[in-house]
Length: 254
Figure 1 (cartoon, helix red, strand yellow):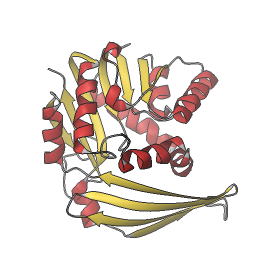
Figure 2 (cartoon, helix red, strand yellow):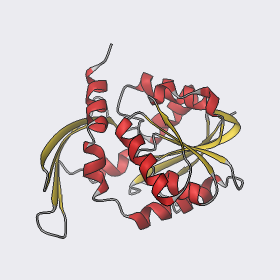
Figure 3 (cartoon, rainbow, N blue to C red):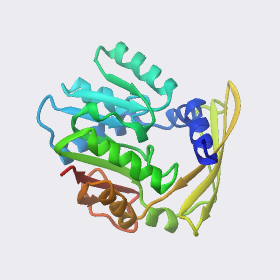
Figure 4 (cartoon, one colour):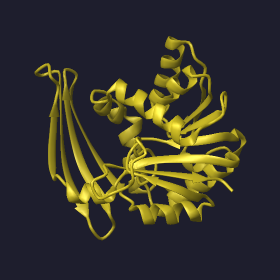
């Protein structure tokens, strides 16, 4: 039975709204810096097999493949997989593309390490769904494999919470994005309505995202079998603090 959270999650990503609204604000230089930092934090052997779990349109996967790594990208949105395929063909790299729900991650992948970037997957559904997804990720990794998870820091979000925000392109009228938010303290879920305008028209989407604290996410990772090793507040390896925008956890498969 499909829940209301699942319908919202599917519509947000399958409709192409997520890719459209976020592609316009992604800095390619920042993506390159993130990939460099990921490799420093995980230190995979040359040519290792890396799983980009919930990897979207492959902005991290392609850079990893260009550096000689074997890359599997898993995402549940067919439009993301198609874009990833086209982008990989354009730059001449091979990606193993898997289109499936992250709760059904195939155990046959057997990657040497995994990454989950930019608050992708975890938090959109229930905690039970997240545990199930992580258990299947655990089975898809080789013994001793490391897993880097990058998400929002709950404490930064609460300290700097903005019920309303807006962004506009430098070229007036090319695109505009406005977001209205409401935080539910009973559940630590951030509920948002995002309005996006560009030359193609207007689109509106709702999201309902669980924002885990570090301690809560560590507990969820342990329930899935992982052993958390390090906490960071950014890709520069800085310690996690109240003013760290990101929460990065490196865990290991036993």
